[in-house]
Length: 429
Image (cartoon, rainbow, N blue to C red; front, top):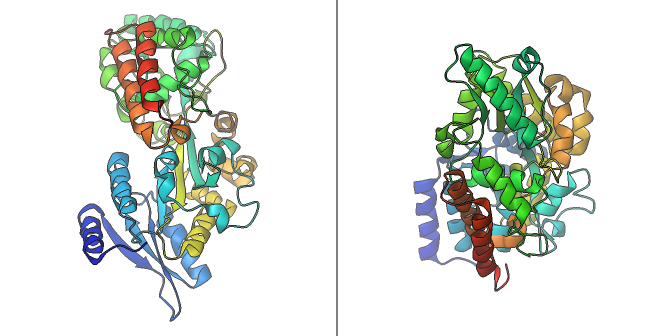
């Protein structure tokens, strides 16, 4: 269905007002087709434009790169407006890992345009995440998962092991924090994590709950599972850290605040994403060459759990050239381009074989340690809850934040949360 002249003008106005700018790549031969792709931030760290340029040169078509807002909330809002009005202005979209379920009705089934076996070699959990109602709506580009960073030098100094359980982490953090403060560092903390009421807290809390054997909020069949004693215990455990091994300010910390604490030498342990590794080992870091990386700990009944993050490429259902758009998405997520992305930008591939690639590992030694964590990552329940996911996550991080701040205990929080999610899903996700 085509848009009206009036709505098409509105799309143009929307693009002019919200997009940061677009640029055409590759000269257009007489019969070339232009494909518009919404990349990342458009800065030097964004490899998408370079990969799109290579595709244009390879196929003889041209590509218009559309740079979108940096903030994920603003980017999602823009996509929802464009897709909701069935605009054909953007063919290929770079989408967050939790968006396929929310946007799926507006995205093309890539299986209709790609050869059989197009998903072979990707991490299975990522393909599953991007499959909505049996339709493959996105191809995984790069991935992330929550990790535990630690100070190797301090664990060695105090003869302590890397913790494998949350109880061990708590005890070790308390002991070394006290010792370091007695030695003169009054600003030292045992553990830094993301406690602000936002999506990052959903990631942390899902790891706590899942690693206690408490499930993942909503299971794959759409059943709400959060109201259980193990989930309650996990939230109570995290609340015990505030003001003891983590600062009161953790209630307002995101990824960058916690990285700052750790990188300045004022934390023993840090929960964060893989991007921290190169920065914390970089020039000017107080902890360069003194840190290690490990899977997150687990509870008394559970296994380590790391929330999956990352980005993917999808094709708009309203594209006038869906076949070419799907080909572009497949090219950027191909083994060769993912290898280049890893070598040039240090991003984690979504293709398993690249974690055994000698060149990739020589440039990014930490990736060999990441493989098991990524292979066993826990997806957020975004695909199963579809366009209700934003409300599901909002309810989860708000109730969790209430536990962290002492307004609720774990049992009360999971009971209230369970009821709220049941109401949300009553008519089916």
